[in-house]
Image (tube, rainbow, N blue to C red; front, side, top):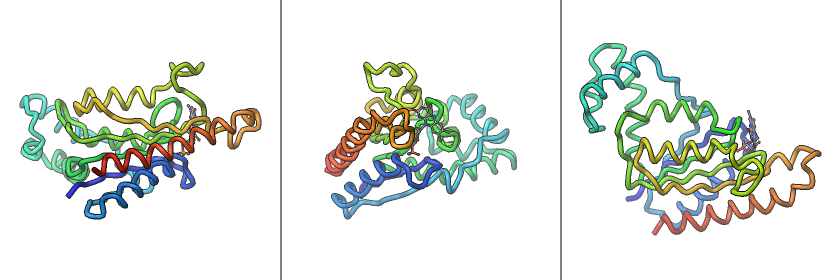
Length: 217
Ligand SMILES: Cc1cc2nc3c(=O)[nH]c(=O)nc-3n(C[C@H](O)[C@H](O)[C@H](O)COP(=O)(O)O)c2cc1C
């Protein structure tokens, strides 16, 4: 039974990244009624920042030269480390139980929201591999960052997540679905770009549906 883990991270309830992510989830669930669907919202149910106990766990993993995620629990020796592990374990189990990880994220300050970074910090340990899981990222951004656009080099959201999943999870085929120019909806100075935004959003929703059906096979 395949599992889809769906993470939302926009602080906005009427959010575009939520809309695109939901489109993927809806299409996948329709195509895989036998599948398991797990949903986490890291803004309404925030993950705490890592603390001293977590860093001790991570240091112990490094010192043990261990790459086996099943043996992580064994490195928690002090009450502080056990408390850190109690936060990590359900999040990591949830992530590892997924075949497809769908992350919906707004662009904040050219990158990702702190709420999503807090989740990544909790669930990421040295030299882990999550391959061959599939990662899909649905983003919304106020401006345009696609190749060739004037601000393409400022896109630390896609670049960060792509490199992060490759470097830390050994997942090198993350698919990004980006809805761009969202600020044109609101900012009168960007009114001339509203069509570009509408087109980008329609394309993102379409890609989300198509990819979900493909990944459901
Ligand atoms: C705190 C904050 C920071 C933002 N920073 C950027 C930015 O650096 N570049 C950009 O293009 N848009 C930026 N935006 C606009 C958002 O990317 C845009 O509103 C997008 O639709 C947010 O995704 P959402 O609709 O899923 O919430 C920012 C918005 C907020 C609230």
